[in-house]
Length: 380
Image 1 (tube, rainbow, N blue to C red):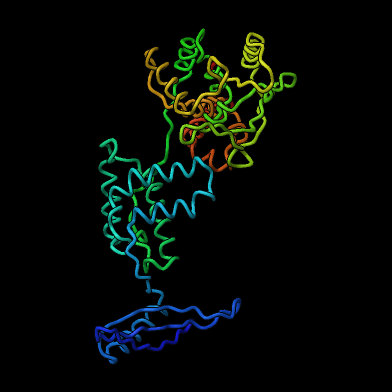
Image 2: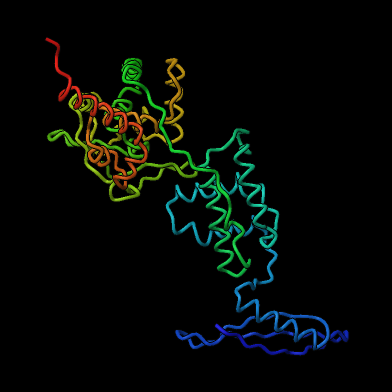
């Protein structure tokens, strides 16, 4: 919209003359009100007139910024408190806090918003590729991208608030994303792990993961009321997470996350026996501590790690158990669409992207079997 402006001459008691530039934007259709912008300059009237024309150009070209000396640290804290905290889930907010405090604020925190330039952000991205400030190891491209997007979102809001003229995160060269191939156990290694777990409190959760492939929060939120013993189904209805050392139960993030899964017969029998031994009721947690309370997310992950170390088993992330379940299903020729529904992926494409390497192997085996059945005749 076009702007108009005029000068107001001001004389202080000290004798110093200043001019206040008052610029007005054309009245908006919805409110009928004019939006005003102000700037004070020292010097002669001719210099003030020149400054006024430059001010109008800044406003019309959207390069105007409010005169603010807010630091990146202070702005990010305000951004999270005012624009993020009430809009996203507690776990997502916690990710924002952890990433900004550990990776962004130590680098940019003491700088004023207007001081952060494109080259500063680019150097920071390259530095993360070489070395994480927490571990000293190179960071994965996907992790760098997630952290970068937090800074970019904050800077985008600063542009909207007219604190900076443009986003210094625009046109940044990011590390090339690598296709993720989950690290999984072979069938023999899975059998050995389950043998090691027999007679321990890890046997039931490992059986559930290998047979059904739940997310950690879905597993920890399971209660006996979620098991339909008559029809052999498990219902995923809740997700238990830990935020600021407090357990929080919430609904799955997507509609596809809320699902009903057929339970293999061996696991169903184990669940029946476990419930009878505990004399559990519907609201009791299936995977729980000795006092019946649910685990905190990190505590259960540590329990899993200790189990692997104690048994001398190859290191795995707990989430890799879910990948093992998916890999076994697809390797056995189970439809990717069925796998998607059991895993609760938001789309068929997500399943295809993560497990494309498994599906290529299955496709190759299918082609070999087809060739053998059609064209390889037994010798006389």
